[in-house]
Amino acid sequence: MKLIIAQYILLIPVIVLIVSTIQKYRQKNIQTITLVATLFFWLFIATIIIFPNLTQIAANFVGIGRGVDLVVYITLSVIIMVIVQVISRNMELEQKITQLARQIALKDAKEKKDTDLVIDNK
Amino acid sequence: MNLPQNTWFVIAAYNEAGRIGAVLEELMKIGANVVVIDDCSADTTSEVCAAFNCVIIRHPINLGQGAALQTGMDYAKSRRANIVVHFDADGQMQLKDVPAMVEPIVTGAAQVTLGSRYLHANNQVPWSKRWFIHFPAVYLQWFLTGLKLSDAHCGFRALSAEAVEICKIKQNRMAHATEILELISDNGLRYKEVPVDIKYHQYGQRFKKGIAILFDLFLLK
Image 1 (spheres, each protein chain N blue to C red):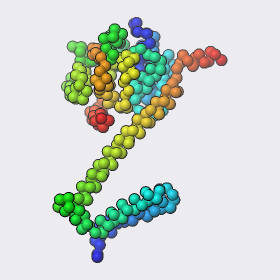
Image 2 (cartoon, helix red, strand yellow):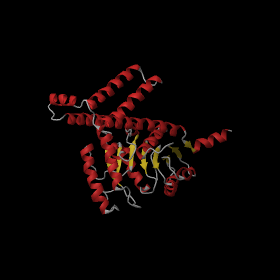
Image 3 (cartoon, one colour):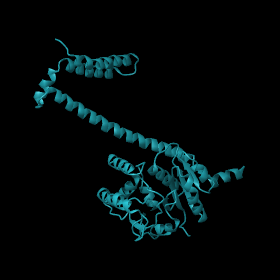
Image 4 (cartoon, each protein chain N blue to C red):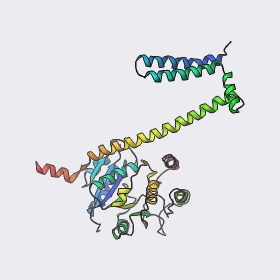
């Protein structure tokens, strides 16, 4: 079996990500289950890169002409899902920051009459 | 000018050091309760306001006009305000219109009053602004909220205590104007449009900003 250059190039980030995942596990930054799941995922990707014909079988099964097309469709839908999630997370965060900033602002409200009163009491 | 007991003016200010002084001076003359929300201005807005007998709330970070108004309403609520008036910091809105704005709330005819620039026959609105910005906005508004108003986003509003309780503005930036109308229609609040005069210093918002507002509106749906 001989790999084409594109396959080598695509394999580099996958290998880097596998190594960094294992490192994270060693440093106990991630749990065992995350490690196993992540490794499975990247090994799956690596398998597809090395044996692209596997996607052809899956593509034929769902009725899409080319294996590459199937990969593109799946990747696109995953990316869109992630973007939607990121946006909604972002909005939640914005609301939380707003509430936080508002509480701080209200706590520090400068009320002229009241501060005058405090001075009078001294 | 006789304003009803415990009427609070909420003024959202962002970099308004040059104009807000004159607005506050007028408000102080009639002895109004004023809360200024300085939305983390880079200029001396807070210092200018400090010379007046008003409450100053400064956001630690810039959040936007919608967020500032909500902060002001939260404060007004804590002071048991009967009526909250949304007023601007740059002198576009005029004090002479306030009695007409609060009157329907005092009599119970409405829970929210919305200022309208177009109910007056001879308004000062530039024609390009009227036809290319406000006209489409009115119809989009109608589509989004079910309220058909003569003026979409005047920004001059008066709210009763119940309305303040119900209106929780979540749109931090400029889309709050439409959000408030949605809150009115969703909660079945009684509203009334009141003709007001708006002085134009310059073109308010640019077209690009308008697109950003649309983006906000549809995303928070």
